[in-house]
Length: 84
Image (cartoon, rainbow, N blue to C red; front, side):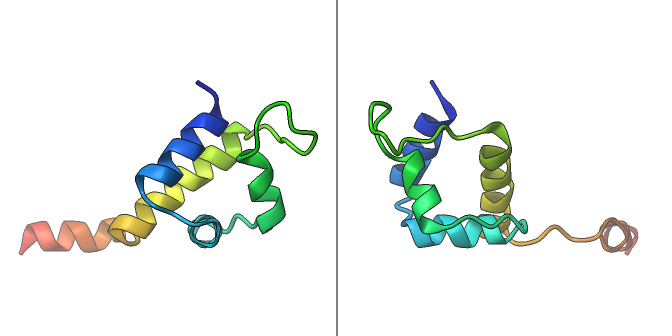
């Protein structure tokens, strides 16, 4: 299974639009245009097909965590909560 397949399956499973994926990537300061993103969802034999790299998938997954859970609390705040 390629990174493109994983990205496609996550998009379908989470019912995300291209604009949602772009917004998720912006949460981790990764910018991509809608046309670049569309190239990942094309078939492999299409002339404009582009292979999804590890960096893009990693940034998408990190952004997805922030999108679903919210930003991570600073470690100091977590320790203070435990000590109370």
